Amino acid sequence: MSVFPEAFKTQMQQLLGTESERFFRALESESPVSIRYNPLKNIGLPTELQKVPWASSSFYLPERPLFTADPLFHAGTYYVQEAASMFLEQALTQHCKLSEKLRILDLCAAPGGKSTLIASLMKGDSLLVSNEVIRSRANILSENIQKWGNGNVWVSNNDPLYIANALSSFFDIVVVDAPCSGEGMFRKAANSVEEWSPQAVNHCTLRQQRILHDIWDTLRPGGILIYSTCTYNRHENEHNLTKFKAQSNFDSLKLSLDTSWGVTETLENGIYGYRFYPHVSKGEGFFLSVLKKSGDKDSANPKIRKNLLTKATSDADFVKSWLKNPDLELFKRKELILAVPKSISYEAQLIESTLNIVSGAAELAELNRKGFIPSPAAALWTGLQKEAFVQSEFDKENTLKFLHLENIKPELTESKEGWQLITHNGIGLGWIKKLSNRVNNYYPKEWRIRMPLNKLI
Ligand code: SAM
Image (cartoon, rainbow, N blue to C red; front, side, top):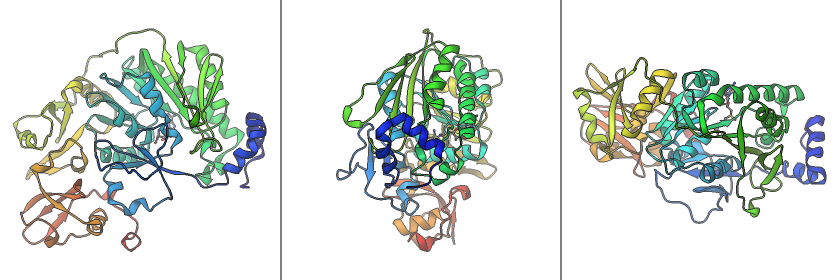
């Protein structure tokens, strides 16, 4: 058996009783590998793979492949996500009116598992603010969101209290996938065992209380807050929510479960919690609870004080042919041209002017003195009219070379000079510029594959 801290073992024995032996045995087995497909980058769902029962478009893989060596992974056609955490889908489909226009905040969002799931479930005229307080993690989040390719998601880098103060009663749904002691990840991430201690649990508990307290005001009355952690710890889960209930008004919402999923429902002080254990469900440890804020009020529409988004002028007209859907409005963030669904034009201007935005909307092209440079995100955006571009379809080996930021041989590309979209299996990945005697590779340096090519090909 792996060496787990004694205090953790005692805690799990108290929590699970005789079941704890099965629990600890399960921690000795391999972690299941699961992926979730991007419904907007339809590459066809596999029929031979086992489905994740509580989530759509999600499957277990028989073993862990080298994802880095798969161009479709870089193209955002699927996301590698721990199966239990996909249970968020049940909270969203059972208690949130996903067919309506919604304003959603994913507060603790990096690296983007929950945000890409939310983006796939909400409608194209809804808004998702995917926030991460740690700047370096916000960059990874932004990369994953841009690769997923929705045009209605913004990545921000703000503190919870700042968001709540700036956007009071603004959101219909807030997801708090809180930083936690990570007990549910002990099988998957060895470092989470090393970092665990009763003191660390206490630190996490207090931080979670602060986050809930700080962010609550951004949720409109009648809105839904989904709280989740990847820990079994009752201090961080049920106890925290009980404390929170003493300070704020909400009802806890029950979820319908299929018994075959093996999810444990808890009900404490009127609060429902949903727990995943690896000896009962095929996944890691996870906890989720759904809170409905008392009252019922439309979300607030604060005045935009200083608008940092400007409406695009005729110098941006050239991107119009790039859009599959004409129901988009063109804006500029400095020299960057963005396409925003008309339905959320106000929200886009408000959050761009209020939050610290890392990326957002469909970023199309940067204007410069010589003309323009297409944005990396545009190549991956699901709303791009690919036919507007010369496309060079690459095989797996050449796509990996492109993603590795190698020099591209001109003979591999279409003959026409100028911008070309690189595709693999018809899915856009990035841009090259073909000149008379060479090809410039415009794949972003920060996104390039760092693993040596001989390990991939
Ligand atoms: N939701 C993510 C996903 O599904 O990919 C995982 C989120 S992870 C469990 C928790 C995140 O909370 C981390 O990215 C961490 O940087 C962030 N975090 C840490 N301290 C925070 C704080 N005080 N307020 C808000 N977020 C915080």
